[in-house]
Amino acid sequence: MSADESTGNDFIRHMIRRDLESGKHGGRVVTRFPPEPNGRLHIGHAKAICVNFGVAEEFGGECHLRFDDTNPLTEDAIFVEAIQEDIRWLGFDWGEHLYFASDYFEQMADFAVQLIERGKAFVCDLSSEQIDARRGSLTEPGLDSPHRTRSAEENLDLFAGMRAGEFPPGSRVLRARIDMASSVLPMRDPVLYRIVDGAHHRTGDRWHIYPMYDFAHCIEDAIEHVTHSLCSLEFIDHRPLYDWVLENVDVPSRPEQTEFARLNLSHTVMSKRMLKQLVDAGRVEDWDDPRMPTLSGMRRRGYPPESIRRFIAGVGVARRDNTIELAQLEAAVRDDLNRTAPRAMAVLDPLRVVVENYPEGQVEELDAINNPEDPAAGVRKVPFSRVLYIEREDFLEDPPKKFFRLAPGREVRLRYAYFITCTDVVKDADGNVVELRCRYDPATRGGDAPDGRKVRGTLHWVAAEQATEVEVRLYEVLFSAHDPADAEPGHSFVESLNPASLRVVRAQVEPALTRVAPGERFQFERIGYFTADPDSGPGRPVFNRTVTLRDSWAKLAKRR
RNA sequence: UGGGGCGUCGCCAAAUUGGUAAGGCAGCGGCCUUUGGAGCCGCCAUUUGCAGGUUCGAGUCCUGCCGCCCCAACCA
Image (cartoon, protein in one colour):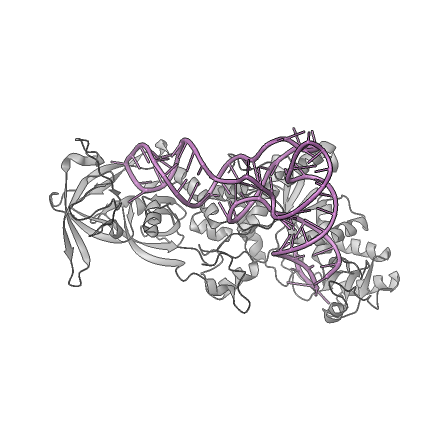
């Protein structure tokens, strides 16, 4: 990953540098991020956002946030707000440049009239099914509509009728007159306008006709004087139509479309349809469930926005299909959190330890470093007393080779506290270990042995009396399949949902972890990074596991 | 199948006008360590889908194959 957030040498930036040198577009750079307000943003959108805003920033241009709200049937104002919140959170600012496609409806209708007057568009009375039947196939040309040769006067009259709401939805459309035999399917007399019944979240019932993407998008770009219209690869077949519309209508500028490959992430799905299905079926809590690849989900999961930007910069921008390993995203998240997250101790699966030679009733306040990577983070006090909790998996009665933790007769260090030696193991009637009896060495206070003796293991711990029990949500990948969307024929992507994607435990945490605000991020020493969920109450935090620490012991143990 | 896009290390991704294969993630060794974390050091493509050709020289040019993805919504 590069030091700054831009790779600076992907094909798009090369192109823009070339354009700047040649003076194309008057030496200006104007990009845009054009979300449709019909769902929440996900990590795939983050790439488009970073590319568009990033490029504008780097070349002294501007990036417009434009809602592509041309389909009132699927869109909703609540997404307009949510999308802005997510983009701001990611760290981008569109300044004055907030636009809505719906604000251009009047101009678009005028351009449609221009096309009609120029004999480039016609009103077609065919039904959707009939148009479909006449589209031809990949190898066969389509059939001309019987209405293709209507006079401009008649078309103008019919279009005015459509606009006035004189015809029912589906009864007529405005189509471009291009070429029904084109090998480029979007050029086969594409629909430009359809009649829609239903209120638009911004224009209400003012309109009865709505423009299609291919007609609307290029005009929106042109109206805003966008210079570089960057979109995903799937639109490459639409570029001839994008250019055709702009050539046949009197637009104020000539934007240029360039396509790049969208982001795919392993172990998740990126389609809005599938994400919505997970929400609707209750497979996840909501769009912002911490397991979702949505920006709101990642925010709640504890991913710092900076880490997402670094991640996007690290994977680059190119034209080939790609699926990035989840591990790469997690590496970016760890890299950020390692530097910024204060450390604290929490025991997720407590095992009681009694330090037999420690005075009953005594409590010591020991110094603990808040962040070894950041001296400015300072130190805090951690209480130590006779009864403690350690992680159950940090003790093994019969330890294998290379297990450096606690075992009968073995000495380990309690981080920032003392060396302890396990002297006895207490079991219940079923033979389960329920308590450890240990002795401590008073000379090792703070964790250093004055005689210089070494211990291999250092354990995190918590003083039982002073600890608070809290809820901790342990997340894993949502899907166990590498590419869930690529399910076998006859099978659904939901079948590869990971049943262990959420596990809730009750943990014991040190005092520093009880008064935290939602969104605060911590490293639980030796375990992973956690963040306080919005579900947290005063003094009653709920923690989400953001990502585990790298665990070379787990790797070693798995190998044997 | 017509059209289009793409094939460089397990996953991403660089490589000025052809000049002799960056980097990141993952992995593997080692050092260091009061987090089995972090950090540090080292290893990890005689080779760019395949086969030919041009050239002193090809990932970059030419020819022919092979493979993957996208397009037949009144969605975007």
